Image 1 (cartoon, rainbow, N blue to C red):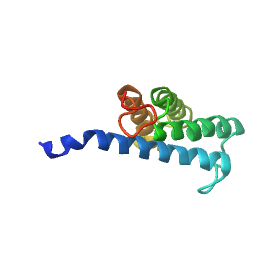
Image 2 (image 1 turned 90 degrees about the horizontal axis):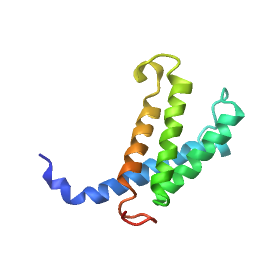
Image 3 (image 1 turned 45 degrees about the vertical axis):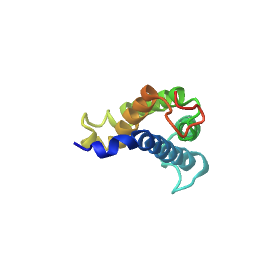
Image 4 (image 1 turned 90 degrees about the vertical axis):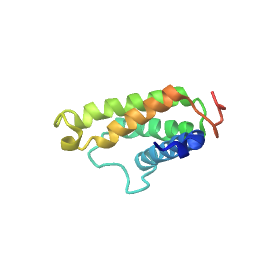
Length: 126
């Protein structure tokens, strides 16, 4: 169908990895440094610093493509835990419990972990 995009698959994946990592990193900057409106008021300090640290460092590592598979796997696990701790207890479906972003990040990072860093990465195209 869209075979015209096939030659650009490596670049498209690299952009996906970089943008996903940078967006995730911004959640860590929000929690740890108070940027972008600061951390949610109801979040306990453990969540702010543990989750924020993983978001900040993990997002940066994924964006840079350094230790990509491990960083993405840890970030995926964090988002799975975040979904079940913060959203899954409210209702099952992500539309109802507002957990869509956690689910998307979980599976985006799982895909990155399985795929590897690709081009434009510190790890190289492995």
